[in-house]
Image (cartoon, rainbow, N blue to C red; front, side, top):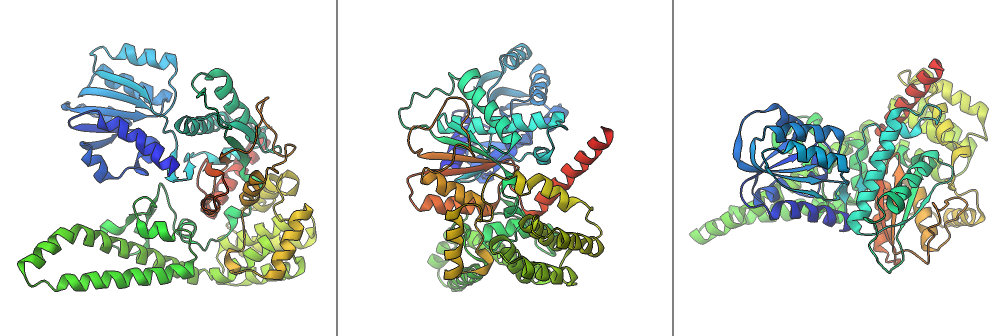
Length: 568
């Protein structure tokens, strides 16, 4: 509950002490921060009758002095300018200013100078500068996420903005938790090192007073890693409910857009998938696709029983009972149709793209050796007319990541075959991936073939067999969590920043993935937290990836890298 509760508590505190009718004014990022933890009906209960974006409020001149304005904004240059203009010509009776992170002194002076009519009642910092999509999973929704892949020589100005936003997000999480962490980072990643050093500088030097919570227990650990250390996880098809919805349909801020799936009623074209608001989803979000079908059938059966009893209305008492239970009945009806629609849509995509066939091969490439058989299987799938372009590309990428050193000749054959079968993919994208995330660039033991312990574990798994061939893959993050629990995370691979070291085993660990997390990883974290190891893990990232977003970032980074080398 930790992150969702912290963000909800901040929103509660903003709204509950201001009586009367209110307008809540947000920016393009705080709208996500609020929407994942607070529903519209809850806002109404707090007398919020209007929710507006700060840039659209700027365009309107209409006076609304009967409303109190509650602003919740990121402390950016752009937002301060909007506020300056709005405070110079106030439209609302009162203004209450809340910022999601630390304000600079100069920004406070600008606001004070602009408030000539003294409508500002308070200015507060409430550190909800992260999108808490699940209790132990947050994201920052950074649009220019591809920047993390650019080589150091390119260093565009956007890269500093990416670093600044990540440092802001991480520091807000620790301010919300009221803790100051010991910081470690992945040695082979320049950007992870840069973010770790900037975060440390902020927490231990620039704002050391703010982060000094005078707590006696062992400091939490912040571990900053790079997505390129595990490029396999975002390339795989998923077969557990939440991860699969994101991979095949897409989830943004816990909402799923179904408008492109055909003739759905208007109120079902965008549905909410939140473990906080949907008991069925909470119980099944980590279950396998096969089991979901059975669970939905049980839910439909339960609903039919309720519907049947509602048809049997004979007396005034029956009618009164039905009216009382009608909101619950409607909610149940909406929930049933939402999950049935999602599963039907995903089954259709699985069938169309022959994903069971493709996914079995992907899992083999990710988890099992055998280069000769793998080459043959990938070649056959590239020739299969039913396999889509994106699936062909992913198969070649997974093969290349696994066998880049073992079979360069066969790798070239696959590149050529991919180019002839799927001409829409730019040549060189797979090579760019290897340059970014090949074996020479990685820290972790991605395929379990570098250290003896992992080799032994893989052999044991091979002998025992796997329960489900489609979900046998475990993200590299799982190994990192195991190492932390056992106190075996190597200093040489994950150095500490400065002279702040871990005294004993931490109870809280925040793992931040520069380049984005996946729902497969957040499932790993949730299951690990449920196992009561004595350590609570929180996962965060710059975005939440599916394979489409990962490839889009890769293409964009390749395009920029290419054009900058041409300039040089």
